[in-house]
Length: 133
Image (cartoon, rainbow, N blue to C red; front, side):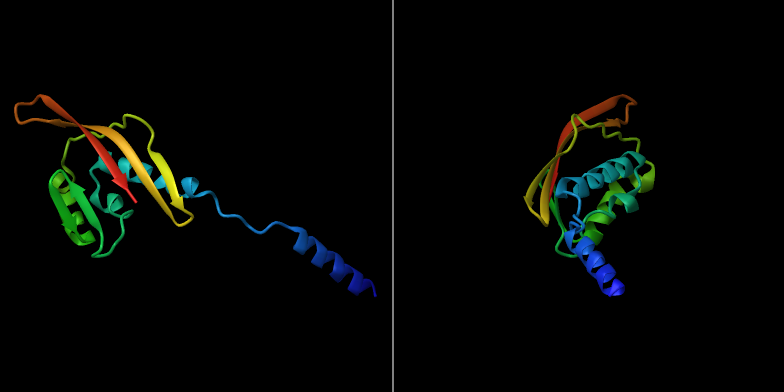
């Protein structure tokens, strides 16, 4: 009888406990743009490209160019950063905005300035808006 009572108490404790809740979508997504920005400022292509979808269906647009497929985007990024020798900097204008679309999808929006040296030794800058889903 004592074992039955103990079992009943354990069952009540387990049933009364809330199920493990996953962190909110924003908390899950927030590290990703931060990781990409850190990799961008280090001009390290592989950690930068660890975040995007590793599939041919990945589409990245930059200015008037659309690139299709993870490998093509990775190869282009490696070229833009001159194999890691780039001197460009990517300071954020503000913290990334994350909008939850549904429990499995979020959109990010970041505004930053790209600062890079010109051939004459002076620095040039451009405003960039980066979005992702």
